[in-house]
Structure formats: C-alpha cells, structure tokens
Length: 149
Image (tube, rainbow, N blue to C red; front, side, top):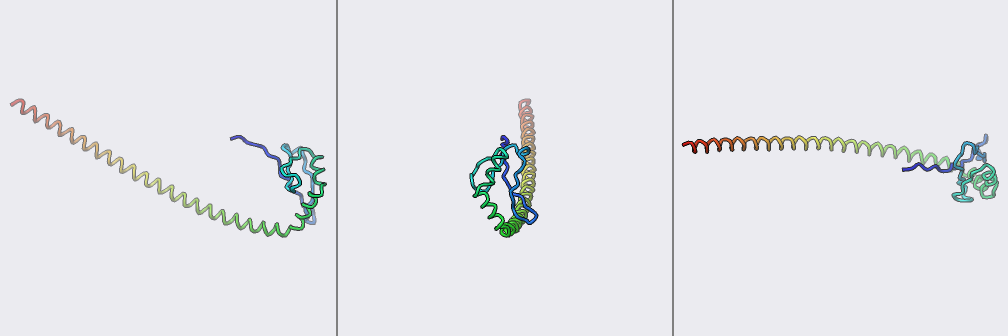
C-alpha cells in the first residue's frame, strides 16, 4: 500500500466577532496545494498563493462565506448532534469489542477442550496398540510353546 499525499482542504478563519473570514494560508507549509470546499471549481487544486487569492475574490466564494456566517447556529446544532452520534458509536464499539472478547475466550476454551479430547483419544489408541502388541507377543509365545511340544 502506498501513501498518497493529498491537498489540504481550506477552512476559513474566525474573527473576533465570531464571523468566518478568509485568511490565505502560507503556501510554504502547504506542499500539495489547497482545495476550497466552496464549490466554485470542484476538485481544483490551488498551488500558489496568488491563485488562491484570486479564487477567494470570486462572487461564488464570497457568497459561500456569507452563507457560512448565516448558518453559524445550524453548525452548532449539527456539532451537538454529531457529538451524540460519536458518543453512541463509541458505546456500540465498546459493546461489540466486549462481544468479540467473549467469543475469543470461548474459542480458546473450546480449542483447549478439543485438544484435551484429541490427546485422550491418542492415548487410548496408544494403549490399545500396546495391548494388541502384548496379545501378539502372548500368541507368539503360545505358538512357540505348541511347536516345542
């Protein structure tokens, strides 16, 4: 598996009045370019500061930023809902992990029981073989005794 570097996703900053504003990030840090989620040019990667600066001056980008500021309260509600979802998913994951741990313990127990049963069967077979060997030896002795007569 190879590691693919992808462009950064642009996120506007927040001013002192808690409004979204455009602040152009330093392209010295951003090596793979930047993608703007405003929808003006989907999947367009801006690789230089002047290119991105030109983009944020477009009408569509400005309208998107304005819409972000109008929907601030909705974002907070969504944030709260997402936190609830994350919390419930963590609980579900913990329950599933507990179930997996229990099943793993059962598998280990049953595997050990099966190994014990197999070992007992092997011992019984060895005992039966040894008994048959003893019987064969006894038969040979009896045959030799008969031959000697």
